[in-house]
Length: 105
Image (cartoon, rainbow, N blue to C red):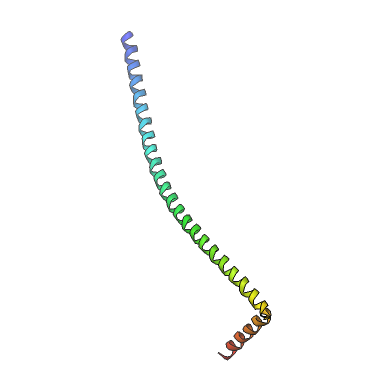
């Protein structure tokens, strides 16, 4: 009877060990899969951050250009006013010339 109990306990322990090994293997496989997914996500993140940095540089450059052009426009408008040139009339004349050129062409 004692030997039968020991044998049953041994079988139960062996079954439990097999079950734990299967679980361990599954967790190991899942960990390796998640590690691969993490590496892919990191690579995508790096790419996105590089593109973001490029966009930020472009934005800064364009902002500087707009500021320069705006300042030049303000200076030119001020000088035209000092010279007594009506900017609205000047623009209207240019628009009219452009329309005539389109009609001729």
